[in-house]
Amino acid sequence: MMTIHAFLIADEVAVTSKGSKLVIEGVFDTVFSEVFPARHKSLTTILIFNDKDNKFKYELFLKHKNKRTKIAGTEFTKKEKTHRVISRLKDWVVEGEGEYIFEAELNDKIVASYTVIAKKI
Image 1 (cartoon, rainbow, N blue to C red):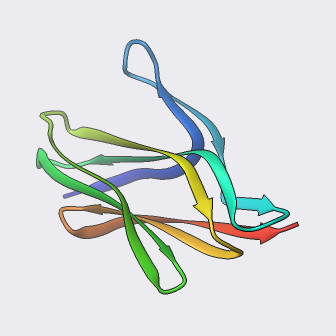
Image 2: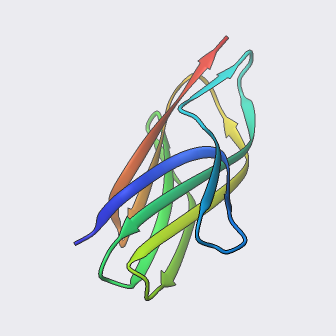
C-alpha cells in the first residue's frame, strides 16, 4: 500500500552531500505580483512516499482554469521503500490571478495535489 508523506512546493530543494537529508527553502502557497503575466524564477516540487512496489511512472501536471498541462515526468525503478521525486522548474510563468493546482501522478493515478494562489498587489 502506498503512503504519501509529503508533497511540497518551494523555491529550492537541495539534497545534503550524504544524500540522506533534504534542505527545503521557501515553501509557499501564494504568489504576489503587481503585473501579470509574472515570472517565478525557481520552483521545486518534492513528493515523498513509501510503497512496496519499486517501478514507477511519475508525472507532474499544472491545472489553471480549464487547462491541465504536463510539466514534468520520469520513470524510475528503486529498491528502497521510501522514494523522493524532486522536480525543478525554471522561470514558471504565472499567467494571471487565480488558483494553480499542481498534481502529482504515479502510474497514471493522482496521488497528491498542492494549490498555489496568485494575487495582484
